[in-house]
Length: 473
Image (cartoon, rainbow, N blue to C red; front, side, top):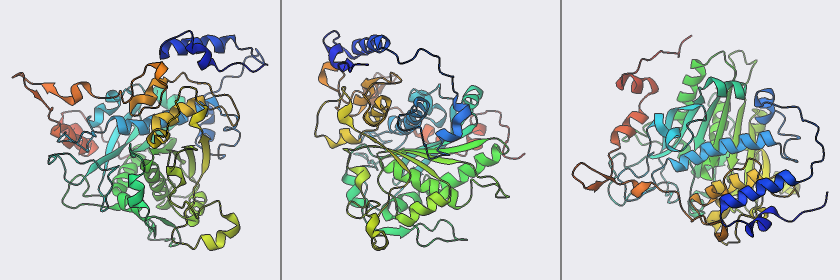
């Protein structure tokens, strides 16, 4: 088969907008000669879900890239993106730092109502260190909390068709990261500390970056949103869900972008270290998988070894031009195998865990050349690159027809001829509404925030729903 001209470049001369270009791409893909017309056996996620979750460390699925795996990684990436789309970044909002939607309405608010999951818990965190890229502060005193920021959510597959498609009931933990680039790295590149999650069988040699650990374990006793730390919120809610769905085929999938990736890895290690994923007889271990995007290194070599010993699976999606995955440990890291014993003893020696998918934004014909580091780090850009990735050295072409316009949601990365404005994602009238007196005001959200923070069943009782307690067999 002869090599053909890039479809995007040839389409530009025949179409003036992104929808027109995608239509041209569809035509060219259909006209491309096929190697074989023999029908391929139809696979289902339910048949190979263990492999998709990393049971075999994704061997044979990454190069060439398996279409089904790609779709699932993108789907989990969209759970991480929901943490950005639902977050109130506006410093002029008195609810800055909270989620814009009620827990029951998050997926509808971010356009994911058909995903078949239900949010059961919102996650909040506080920190004792300065995190300008992560913790948002309003221009005026915010009314809902002086210490907390909304950091993500826990959700569970509840739609029967989705459970059937997946082949099990999936529990998702999604962590919010940073939308700005490296200012948070400066504050977090401190030193390694023992994780100390398992006090019965401690592993003092397992160490993680102190700033990540602080964010995961810090609490503020005067704030009801983070009176219990992020760690306790995750462990208690997961324990409740595992009890509620005891006896079913279950999986835990954790996802996050940027700093959220670090929290995803920490929480995965925590869950496995305390044994939440193991049966009482220790005969069965529920799979825990992390799909991370643009994440930094989290711990030392002992952390990596212990994660592998616990059977955790990590698939890291990175852009080779992004600086965040290169830190901490930019000088001493997993690449220094010849000096491993010496390097591992250093207090600033870090090690990546799991399997990496290395993407390159210069391979996408949709993206323009830029020196903007935020574009390199953007989550939607990663999902776009993943959609067009088919293996090392393979031609970039979109697989699922995921809309490239999503890339410019919160950055300026698409070529101008596609006529997609930069930073186009925003609330109508920047969240302002007109009241009965004709005045433009911010809508009150304190009830939404309070109800979303309540215990799952406490919320149901307050709003008058019939509750069946499934926490006991």
